[in-house]
Length: 79
Image (cartoon, rainbow, N blue to C red; front, side):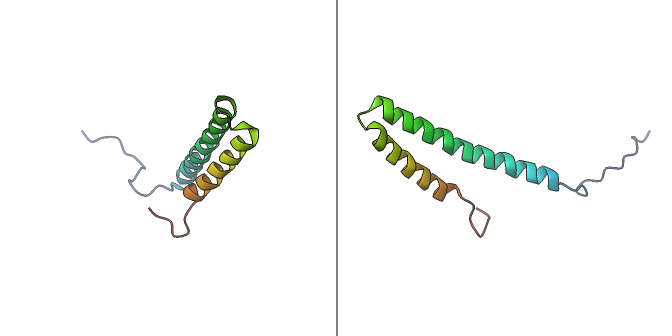
């Protein structure tokens, strides 16, 4: 007895929506993680050290700039 007929053929499906959703989720994860890390760093320095507001702000801005430079998309793509 043969199995049921199917219109599905492996590799012929348009996956552009899945690809764009994956890229969106990965981007939100990457930039959201940086934002959470910077906020935690700022408040840790502000309340747990003698750095004060301006010291905490300076270190947090520096961490943000470094994080953006490291996490941004490269022009060539790939790994």
